[in-house]
Amino acid sequence: MPRLIAALGLPMPDSAPAPRIDMKMAAVMAPMVGRSWVPPKPPALMGRMANLSSLAAFLPLTDIAALMAELQQLVSELAQNVQPVLSQAAYMPKKPMLNMVMAARMTLSMRAQGLCPMDLSGLDSTFAQAEGLPPHPGKMNATMAAVRGMGPIPRFAVPIPMQSMAMTLASLAPLKTIPTSLAMPPVSSSKFGGAAMAMLAQLARIPPLPIDASKLLSELARLTDLAAIQAAFGQGAMTTTGVGKVQAMLNYMSRLPMPPIPPMALGLQPKLDMLPPLPAVEAGARVASLNVQTFNQAHSLSPPRVPILSPLMALNALKNVLADILGVKPHQGCPVCMG
Image (cartoon, rainbow, N blue to C red):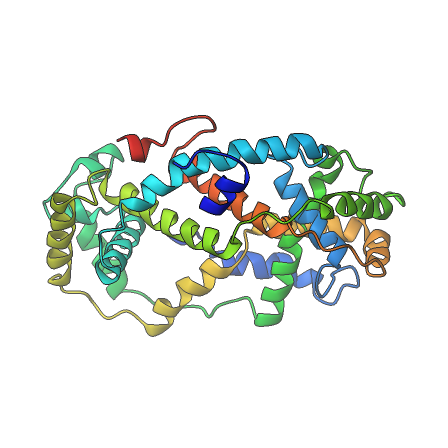
């Protein structure tokens, strides 16, 4: 990011649903298996246009001059907001930071199921009160009884080939908004392929941004971790007092007698987390089934490489974390930094 700032001449500044999502997805996708309109992987042209469609909501991709001006503003805002937030974790060694992140995700997951560890341990009831959670003793006893009475756990319902198909279809979901977001002909139009190639050719002429997309995504992961810590433990979580309170909560939780949990249940959640959102899969399926001819034509087209695409996708992801998770709005200071 400092290199990008210099180049632009800027100053330097969980609970599982019922029925389970995998069962719902398998039921929706079973009729699609073997259908000719389901592509084994997206044509390169359609994949890049789907990426552009997801970016068009916040960048003027059809106006190169406006795009560069918007990038200047975006990078300036991120520089003001990202680095101060990341500095909160700079002093903490890697292992304690990882422990804080794990404790935060455990807390948020339990709180989503109606039980707050900070309240349960008697350290802080404000989070439970803010969310209207029931008194912790009865809820805890009911939860433990439910675990002890847990029956057979149904196996993960989405086999690997269907997982791949779900990811492919979900990646096509942004194509449904292409005509409005990019001023393009409809995907069903015979003119779509030519218009898409022309737009990609125009964007391909923009020089590469001097930015390391992988480093930016690494910062994105750290921001997401910090956001989870703040959501779980408040704005004072990274202070000495805040860390001590979290450690006391973990000490209390470690002494709780836990009933045995079936290994299959422990291994199920990561698989559920890897599934794409079902609405995105359904949207992508509609796009693919209604535009078979366009998809077939796209396989024969070789879109140009667009060097700025990966950095733009990384910037978009980082901007969304600041806006949606940390509460930073465009042209506004970061409340985490200011608080």
